Length: 413
Image (cartoon, rainbow, N blue to C red; front, side, top):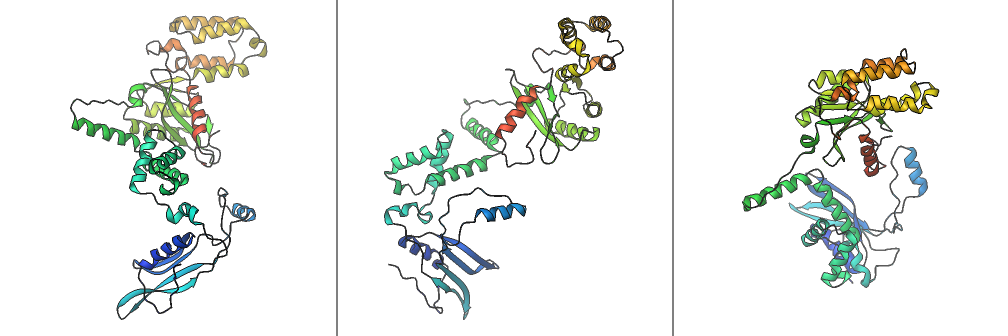
């Protein structure tokens, strides 16, 4: 048994702070720092309490915090039982010699001590050394999770009590490593490749930037609104050489006015270094003005899907049930084999046959035909490239899948 009793006049130094941890480790209880005061870098008062001091907050406390605007933390198991055991040290200087004395000491616990066979689970006896961090990093590179990492350490060292940590410690360390590398992980890989290249002339590596490879045609979609701030979530999306969607950038704007879009397009070009050759958007007139102002050399194309989706609400209901009309109209607007004059002839034939010459929506579409009809883009090699902004739908689903429900800014609808 270690006796930590001290008189108020005894002189101590900062080693007493760690000595109390040694005492707690030997007896069988955990400690935590309660309070500390510093003046000009010198600790003037230091208080340590039993880890089971205090009590767990009740559901009523959480509800009161929620009503006050505070977020509710995840409820976890708690071993706090209101233990009053504590020790506090106070700084003093006598005759120019600094030191500490025990101002308060309470050794009485209201709970059982941890048995010796379980003491290796105490936080005081758990410590991740450099070798642990290196092993956790190696396991993370091999896609080995915390539980398997802990089991591997146990097998290597021989038993659980020799590991020096638990699964939670390994999980937290792995989280911290990933948080440290977040945002610079790609650059870390490139730096490592460059070092290997310096060491061996035979070693070679290549990398590419998505936008500069696949950014000739960009779909820009603004149909998503954020839940809390009512901002517009606008991704810039393209396709790679396998036809899969690639996100180049994402913007948030507060409205659909020309100034907001002009600001976003200007920053996009500034970040990417070059404007896209073609941009596919919906029929927003503010967006069109911003494109003409900022993306001067970029071809602008309206999304075919948005236009055809409105067909059901624009044409008379009897035409929607006419299969011949739907076949002829789709063959007219979707064909990329027609020349512009052939399209105009076919369009006039269809609208005259079905009595749509004076229909305002069809007249508007024909007036802006050069912005959406494939016949007017025959000089631009498209192949299987983007003709609609619907490619952004998969990107929206992906972002909603990976985003945290607690994150309010990018949470889109």
